[in-house]
Structure formats: structure tokens, C-alpha cells
Length: 233
Image (tube, rainbow, N blue to C red; front, side):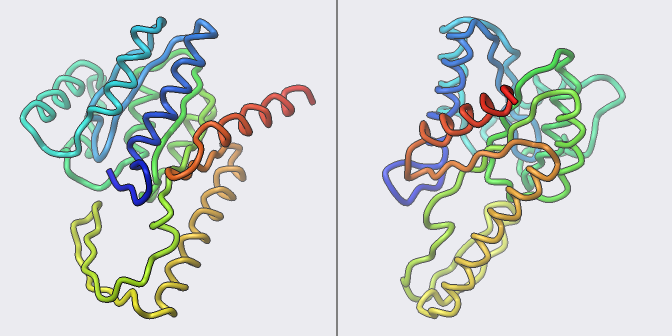
């Protein structure tokens, strides 16, 4: 939900999903959606058609981050219907827990038999997911899409602030007036992105970086042109 410029990361993600969905529809391909946090919160099986693509986009925009009764019920329905018997893993325990990319990859492998192009859109504030993505990429065409906001990469000088970790709930008071602290944050954020890109590419997983304050189209066009050149070789 975070956004420091004209749109949030959620809105940038929805725009990205819209581009992918309508591109797939134009090519007469199927489109599906899995929304996840600590657990799989919603699953829409892949289908064709513009009406279906519009539903996918609507769900990305409308899906909340709270634990409403409707969301809990939806998560339970997904679990009962789509999780195969004998594979009820720890990542189904509760909705509000740290992001589990590995759980989403396991879910993909359990419900998708045919090879698919899977765009994993996340900020990747998670650990221990690489092996699951590597395993999924052996069967499917997995593309990691990192979405960031400028304020995550460069913190402004606003004095003492209390920040809460959205994943763990832990809080800390930070002095943003310290130039050394701001430079440390900026360097660590840049290193994290570079390391993510190196790690994914080193494991033959394609990588796209989306800045929520900038164009979503340009990075996607650049990615598809790169893929096209690679296929010609």
C-alpha cells in the first residue's frame, strides 16, 4: 500500500498486471492470478478472454491487507479447494505472517501442470525462497519482478521517526537527521537490489525492476525486447 509519489506500489503492480493480462489476451493466451502474503489469499485459475483479464486486474486493486472475515473465509476456501491432500504446510497457519514467496511457488507447482510464464511480483522482503523459485523455474518460465518506491531507496531528513516493520511488527526510533544514517540506508537499499538481480540472473531467473514512481511500460518493453533478442541467438 506504500507510495510516496503519485501512486502506491499496489497501483504500480496493478498497472503491470493489466499490461501483462491484456498482452496475454491479445495473444489468445490464458491469464491467472495468485495473491499471497504469509499464505495464499486468493487464487483465480487461468482462463482466456478480456472479461477474465479485467477480473484479474480488479482483484489486484481491490484485495485488502487486513484480516476481515471475508478475506479469512476466502483464504480458507482456496486452501480447501486447491491444496492437495497431504501437502498442508506451515505456511497455511495464519494469514498475518511474514511474506512467503516459497509458499507461493509450492502452491504454483501444486495447481499448475502445464508450463506457464509466471511473473512473481513482490518487494522480496523475504528469505529462503530461492530454491523454491529455482525448482519452479525448471518446470515453468519464472520471472522475478521487484517493485520499489523511491522512499525505500533514499530516506529524507525528517528528524526522529518511529518506523514499524510491516512483516514482523517490530518498531524502532531512527534519526533521519543523521547524514551517515541516510547514506547507510541508501547504500544498503542499492546493494539489496543489485544482489537480488545478481542472484536471480545467476540462477537463470529473469529479473525486472519496477519503480512505482516511474513508467511501468518502459521496463516491461525493455524486458520483452531482451527476451526476443535472446531467442534469436
